[in-house]
Image (cartoon, rainbow, N blue to C red; front, side, top):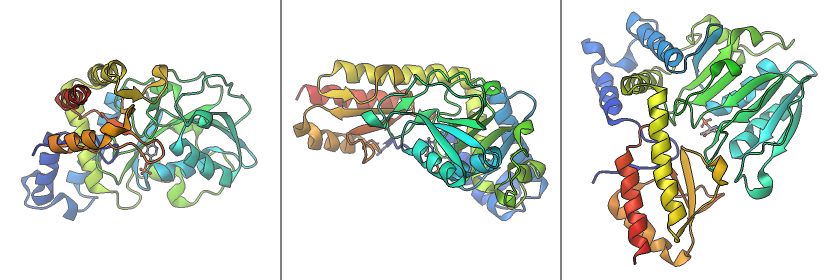
Length: 354
Ligand SMILES: *Cc1c(COP(=O)(O)O)cnc(C)c1O
């Protein structure tokens, strides 16, 4: 049966990308060798790395002065690397706590130095994005999470930032236009809109580095990876290759502008049904609703088993909400076809009529 994969991450990738990726395991570039058994120093792989970096720069219109890195350790490693590379000795960092991932980032920063939480939406179980806060000038950086994967909220307007602006964009990078020049550092684990788990994209402004007075461990120092074009040690060749394929796919579709419109259309379709159908209720504040992760509840528990069964029968998968929120979460990343959302909506209408 055809599956409709609403998983939050790892998650859906374009079918075409999966086919090309499979082929590369058996016979890469028609050279009768596998992508995963050739040297990462060989020209064919260097070409992949360069192409992937170029596509990131093109798709996000990254201005001069930024490096694009493909690292390991996930977005979770970036929670620490951001702090080590940007917080001065005896310095200060500022954060907003908008969900579980933001909190994990804060935990790492606190291990390194003074960490100020400017705003916190845990009072309402992270169902909104705080907006009433002011970022002080005399801190080393500010950190935010653009899209809260678990709670289904998304920053629509980034704050004015008088210090370095850093952002975890793991679950909405390449889903909408961003003005990169307003940011000093952006990172994103690959496994939501870009590729398989195993690599993390980092976009960093070169001239902000090397100013902390710290002796940063080699592998945790962005400059190590910048100086070696992300090949200081063996890079995760397969995730980088598949990311390159996904970015090619996105470019062929017309780029971020086009996918952003698609994503808005897809999200609106689903939110409109949630708001119309008395059996369902959205959990996030309307103005802060994520276009990537749509969180909702059934208003009458007695239908839960039936709805789950109908989803299962229809091939709808990965739609269970995170254990800290309950209910449902439909993750509708770039590769999610609108047809799959229409099928979900059809089920929602069907259960209403029961
Ligand atoms: C998934 C996710 C992470 C964690 O990424 P890993 O690559 O597993 O470390 C961090 N932040 C956000 C916003 C996420 O959605």
